[in-house]
Image 1 (cartoon, rainbow, N blue to C red):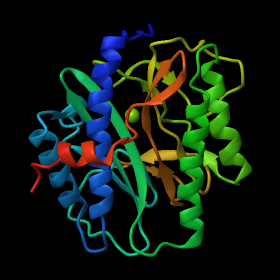
Image 2 (tube, protein in one colour; image 1 turned 120 degrees about the vertical axis):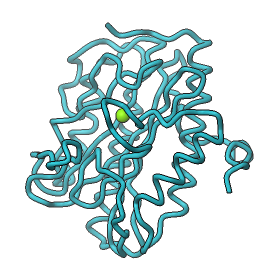
Image 3 (cartoon, helix red, strand yellow; image 1 turned 180 degrees about the vertical axis):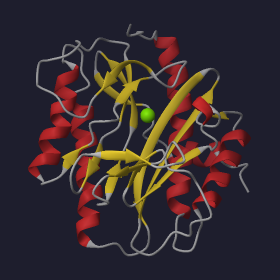
Length: 262
Ligand code: MG
Protein backbone atom coordinates (compact mmCIF):
# COMPACT_ATOMS: atom_id res chain seq x y z
CA UNK A 1 0.00 0.00 0.00
CA UNK A 2 1.28 3.44 -0.91
CA UNK A 3 1.24 5.73 2.13
CA UNK A 4 0.42 9.34 1.25
CA UNK A 5 2.01 11.94 3.53
CA UNK A 6 0.38 14.91 5.21
CA UNK A 7 1.78 18.41 4.77
CA UNK A 8 3.27 18.16 8.27
CA UNK A 9 5.03 14.93 7.39
CA UNK A 10 6.36 16.41 4.16
CA UNK A 11 7.72 19.35 6.16
CA UNK A 12 9.68 16.86 8.30
CA UNK A 13 10.87 15.02 5.22
CA UNK A 14 12.07 18.33 3.82
CA UNK A 15 14.29 18.68 6.89
CA UNK A 16 15.79 15.19 6.53
CA UNK A 17 16.08 15.73 2.78
CA UNK A 18 17.92 19.01 3.16
CA UNK A 19 20.25 17.49 5.71
CA UNK A 20 21.21 14.53 3.57
CA UNK A 21 21.51 16.80 0.53
CA UNK A 22 24.00 18.94 2.47
CA UNK A 23 25.94 15.88 3.56
CA UNK A 24 26.25 14.63 -0.01
CA UNK A 25 27.32 18.07 -1.19
CA UNK A 26 30.11 18.14 1.40
CA UNK A 27 31.23 14.63 0.53
CA UNK A 28 31.33 15.53 -3.15
CA UNK A 29 33.58 18.49 -2.38
CA UNK A 30 36.07 16.35 -0.44
CA UNK A 31 36.50 13.55 -2.99
CA UNK A 32 39.98 13.48 -4.54
CA UNK A 33 42.46 10.92 -5.79
CA UNK A 34 44.25 9.09 -2.96
CA UNK A 35 41.37 9.30 -0.51
CA UNK A 36 39.91 6.01 0.70
CA UNK A 37 36.21 5.34 0.42
CA UNK A 38 36.25 4.50 4.15
CA UNK A 39 37.40 8.06 4.91
CA UNK A 40 34.35 9.32 3.04
CA UNK A 41 32.14 6.97 5.07
CA UNK A 42 33.65 8.12 8.37
CA UNK A 43 33.12 11.77 7.45
CA UNK A 44 29.53 11.09 6.43
CA UNK A 45 28.72 9.32 9.69
CA UNK A 46 30.23 12.12 11.78
CA UNK A 47 28.37 14.82 9.87
CA UNK A 48 25.07 13.00 10.20
CA UNK A 49 25.41 12.26 13.91
CA UNK A 50 26.65 15.78 14.68
CA UNK A 51 23.48 17.09 13.04
CA UNK A 52 21.39 15.01 15.46
CA UNK A 53 20.38 12.45 12.87
CA UNK A 54 21.07 8.76 12.27
CA UNK A 55 22.82 7.27 9.22
CA UNK A 56 19.88 5.20 7.97
CA UNK A 57 21.94 2.68 6.02
CA UNK A 58 23.98 1.61 9.06
CA UNK A 59 22.51 -1.70 10.20
CA UNK A 60 19.78 -1.66 7.55
CA UNK A 61 19.22 -5.37 6.79
CA UNK A 62 22.72 -5.80 8.22
CA UNK A 63 24.47 -3.26 5.95
CA UNK A 64 27.55 -2.27 7.99
CA UNK A 65 28.26 1.31 6.87
CA UNK A 66 26.78 4.81 6.61
CA UNK A 67 27.21 5.19 2.85
CA UNK A 68 27.18 2.91 -0.15
CA UNK A 69 30.46 3.47 -1.99
CA UNK A 70 30.32 2.08 -5.53
CA UNK A 71 33.28 2.64 -7.84
CA UNK A 72 33.35 2.20 -11.64
CA UNK A 73 31.70 -1.15 -12.53
CA UNK A 74 30.06 -1.30 -9.11
CA UNK A 75 26.42 -0.32 -9.55
CA UNK A 76 25.11 0.13 -6.00
CA UNK A 77 25.53 -1.13 -2.41
CA UNK A 78 29.36 -1.14 -2.47
CA UNK A 79 31.20 -1.35 0.85
CA UNK A 80 33.42 1.56 1.88
CA UNK A 81 36.96 0.19 2.25
CA UNK A 82 40.65 0.99 2.24
CA UNK A 83 40.47 1.33 -1.54
CA UNK A 84 42.19 4.57 -2.56
CA UNK A 85 40.22 6.48 -5.16
CA UNK A 86 42.20 6.88 -8.37
CA UNK A 87 42.34 9.56 -11.02
CA UNK A 88 39.71 8.60 -13.61
CA UNK A 89 37.42 6.64 -11.29
CA UNK A 90 33.73 7.37 -11.11
CA UNK A 91 32.50 7.09 -7.54
CA UNK A 92 28.85 6.72 -6.57
CA UNK A 93 27.98 7.83 -3.05
CA UNK A 94 24.53 6.85 -1.80
CA UNK A 95 23.58 8.16 1.64
CA UNK A 96 20.50 8.24 3.86
CA UNK A 97 19.63 10.01 7.09
CA UNK A 98 16.83 9.57 9.58
CA UNK A 99 15.91 12.86 11.26
CA UNK A 100 13.00 13.04 13.69
CA UNK A 101 11.68 9.75 12.37
CA UNK A 102 11.76 10.51 8.65
CA UNK A 103 14.24 9.33 6.05
CA UNK A 104 15.96 11.25 3.28
CA UNK A 105 17.84 9.32 0.59
CA UNK A 106 20.11 10.70 -2.14
CA UNK A 107 22.98 9.63 -4.36
CA UNK A 108 25.35 11.02 -6.96
CA UNK A 109 28.20 9.74 -9.08
CA UNK A 110 31.32 11.84 -8.75
CA UNK A 111 34.26 11.99 -11.17
CA UNK A 112 37.59 11.52 -9.35
CA UNK A 113 40.18 13.92 -10.75
CA UNK A 114 40.32 13.90 -14.53
CA UNK A 115 37.88 11.40 -16.03
CA UNK A 116 37.53 10.21 -19.63
CA UNK A 117 34.93 11.87 -21.82
CA UNK A 118 32.85 8.69 -22.15
CA UNK A 119 32.59 8.31 -18.38
CA UNK A 120 31.68 11.97 -17.93
CA UNK A 121 28.94 11.50 -20.51
CA UNK A 122 27.61 8.47 -18.61
CA UNK A 123 27.36 10.58 -15.45
CA UNK A 124 25.74 13.48 -17.30
CA UNK A 125 23.14 11.30 -19.01
CA UNK A 126 22.34 9.59 -15.68
CA UNK A 127 21.70 13.00 -14.10
CA UNK A 128 19.55 13.96 -17.08
CA UNK A 129 17.59 10.72 -16.64
CA UNK A 130 16.96 11.64 -13.01
CA UNK A 131 15.77 15.12 -13.97
CA UNK A 132 13.47 13.75 -16.68
CA UNK A 133 12.08 11.29 -14.12
CA UNK A 134 11.49 14.08 -11.60
CA UNK A 135 9.58 16.01 -14.26
CA UNK A 136 7.14 13.07 -14.43
CA UNK A 137 6.50 13.04 -10.65
CA UNK A 138 3.14 14.79 -11.02
CA UNK A 139 -0.38 14.20 -9.78
CA UNK A 140 -2.29 12.13 -12.33
CA UNK A 141 0.78 10.66 -14.04
CA UNK A 142 1.62 6.96 -13.70
CA UNK A 143 4.70 5.18 -12.39
CA UNK A 144 5.34 3.94 -15.92
CA UNK A 145 5.83 7.55 -17.03
CA UNK A 146 8.78 7.83 -14.63
CA UNK A 147 10.32 4.57 -15.83
CA UNK A 148 9.83 5.45 -19.46
CA UNK A 149 11.44 8.87 -19.00
CA UNK A 150 14.59 7.21 -17.68
CA UNK A 151 14.66 4.27 -20.07
CA UNK A 152 14.04 6.22 -23.25
CA UNK A 153 16.76 8.79 -22.52
CA UNK A 154 19.33 6.20 -21.42
CA UNK A 155 18.71 3.96 -24.41
CA UNK A 156 18.74 6.90 -26.83
CA UNK A 157 22.30 7.46 -25.62
CA UNK A 158 23.28 3.83 -26.17
CA UNK A 159 23.19 2.89 -22.49
CA UNK A 160 21.13 0.34 -20.60
CA UNK A 161 18.97 0.64 -17.50
CA UNK A 162 19.53 -1.67 -14.54
CA UNK A 163 16.44 -3.88 -14.03
CA UNK A 164 17.42 -5.70 -10.84
CA UNK A 165 17.19 -2.63 -8.55
CA UNK A 166 14.59 0.11 -8.48
CA UNK A 167 13.55 3.31 -6.77
CA UNK A 168 11.00 3.27 -3.96
CA UNK A 169 8.50 5.06 -1.82
CA UNK A 170 10.04 6.60 1.29
CA UNK A 171 8.85 8.03 4.60
CA UNK A 172 9.26 6.73 8.12
CA UNK A 173 10.91 3.75 6.50
CA UNK A 174 13.56 3.98 3.81
CA UNK A 175 11.84 1.47 1.55
CA UNK A 176 8.09 1.85 1.29
CA UNK A 177 5.69 1.01 -1.51
CA UNK A 178 5.67 1.47 -4.42
CA UNK A 179 8.67 0.12 -6.26
CA UNK A 180 9.72 2.60 -8.94
CA UNK A 181 11.45 0.87 -11.87
CA UNK A 182 13.71 2.85 -14.19
CA UNK A 183 11.95 1.29 -17.15
CA UNK A 184 8.30 1.09 -18.13
CA UNK A 185 5.56 2.19 -20.43
CA UNK A 186 3.86 5.58 -20.46
CA UNK A 187 0.43 5.52 -18.81
CA UNK A 188 1.03 2.17 -17.09
CA UNK A 189 1.41 1.38 -13.41
CA UNK A 190 -0.07 3.03 -10.32
CA UNK A 191 -1.42 6.56 -10.56
CA UNK A 192 0.62 9.23 -8.78
CA UNK A 193 -1.23 11.13 -6.07
CA UNK A 194 -0.64 14.20 -3.95
CA UNK A 195 1.38 13.42 -0.81
CA UNK A 196 3.34 10.53 -2.24
CA UNK A 197 7.08 10.74 -1.60
CA UNK A 198 9.44 8.85 -3.87
CA UNK A 199 13.14 8.08 -3.97
CA UNK A 200 13.86 7.96 -7.69
CA UNK A 201 17.24 6.50 -8.56
CA UNK A 202 18.30 5.66 -12.10
CA UNK A 203 21.20 3.20 -12.35
CA UNK A 204 22.60 3.44 -15.87
CA UNK A 205 25.15 1.07 -17.40
CA UNK A 206 27.54 1.88 -20.22
CA UNK A 207 27.19 -1.73 -21.42
CA UNK A 208 24.51 -4.34 -20.78
CA UNK A 209 21.96 -4.08 -17.99
CA UNK A 210 22.78 -7.39 -16.27
CA UNK A 211 24.27 -7.36 -12.78
CA UNK A 212 25.65 -9.77 -10.21
CA UNK A 213 26.33 -9.51 -6.50
CA UNK A 214 29.83 -10.05 -5.11
CA UNK A 215 30.67 -12.56 -2.38
CA UNK A 216 30.27 -9.90 0.34
CA UNK A 217 26.53 -10.33 -0.27
CA UNK A 218 26.01 -6.63 -1.03
CA UNK A 219 28.19 -5.09 -3.72
CA UNK A 220 26.33 -5.09 -7.04
CA UNK A 221 28.52 -4.97 -10.18
CA UNK A 222 27.81 -4.99 -13.89
CA UNK A 223 28.13 -8.47 -15.36
CA UNK A 224 30.17 -7.14 -18.29
CA UNK A 225 32.46 -5.09 -15.95
CA UNK A 226 31.63 -1.87 -17.81
CA UNK A 227 31.08 1.32 -15.76
CA UNK A 228 27.77 2.22 -14.17
CA UNK A 229 26.45 5.52 -12.79
CA UNK A 230 23.75 6.25 -10.23
CA UNK A 231 21.84 9.36 -9.18
CA UNK A 232 19.03 9.73 -6.66
CA UNK A 233 16.74 12.32 -5.13
CA UNK A 234 13.84 12.16 -2.68
CA UNK A 235 10.81 13.88 -4.21
CA UNK A 236 7.46 14.94 -2.75
CA UNK A 237 4.42 15.07 -5.03
CA UNK A 238 2.55 18.34 -4.49
CA UNK A 239 -0.36 19.98 -6.29
CA UNK A 240 2.15 22.44 -7.72
CA UNK A 241 4.43 19.68 -9.03
CA UNK A 242 7.45 17.75 -7.79
CA UNK A 243 9.41 19.13 -4.84
CA UNK A 244 12.94 17.76 -4.73
CA UNK A 245 13.43 17.46 -0.98
CA UNK A 246 17.12 16.48 -1.21
CA UNK A 247 18.13 19.32 -3.53
CA UNK A 248 20.04 21.85 -1.42
CA UNK A 249 18.25 25.14 -1.81
CA UNK A 250 20.14 27.52 0.46
CA UNK A 251 23.92 27.77 0.73
CA UNK A 252 23.61 29.58 4.05
CA UNK A 253 21.37 26.92 5.53
CA UNK A 254 23.69 24.23 4.23
CA UNK A 255 26.69 25.83 5.92
CA UNK A 256 24.77 26.24 9.17
CA UNK A 257 23.62 22.62 9.17
CA UNK A 258 27.11 21.26 8.99
CA UNK A 259 28.88 24.08 10.84
CA UNK A 260 29.76 21.80 13.74
CA UNK A 261 31.62 19.36 11.59
CA UNK A 262 35.39 19.49 11.98
MG1 MG B 1 17.18 4.65 -2.45
